[in-house]
Image 1 (cartoon, rainbow, N blue to C red):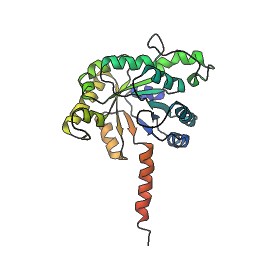
Image 2: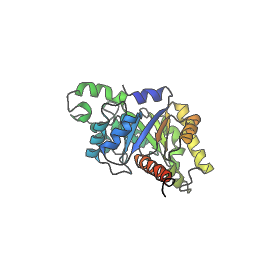
Image 3: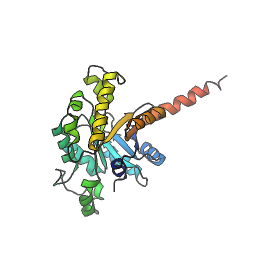
Length: 255
């Protein structure tokens, strides 16, 4: 059973990581740290299918759920990532009900969807074919990204699509679509995000957000507002943050 999906269904907070650097050691270290899930960034990162499979393999033996933010809402791309072993799919730029329906259909087997059957890594290359095909539709987590003002206007239609488990706000793209590029704390952008948050609560979907800076207090604030699906920073930011901390401390030691 998908532990993250079960958490979100009961309104519990699920804290995940985010990977853009395509090296298995990064995935292994972050998974062993104890994140509930880790999303590979196939949209803005350089991670392809082969690299992604290696990253998923590095997470084996941990309780961390392997997820991916796909590069686009494409049936073949979503299908291939599911075949590679992704237990959750984050779909960017979902602005309409039709796009949400397409995302769900790509991630699920018939009769709920259109995902093709075949031997793949997700079913241990056929060894667990029957179990996988029986359980996958219930287990796979489908998160739609709300990152355009059009998506906010259509939020009720999007979130009432069967099979959508949650919505993930994209504040930078959202701000750009509103003519407020980069002003993610502008009152109008915050108000738009609040519309999504309230709609998620109304329809029983998990509201998600990505907190890129390493600021625990900001994560606490979002949790207090009601966000439950939270991505904490990015692998590259973790590395830079740790480097800067020690270098800044080192200034006190240099003669």
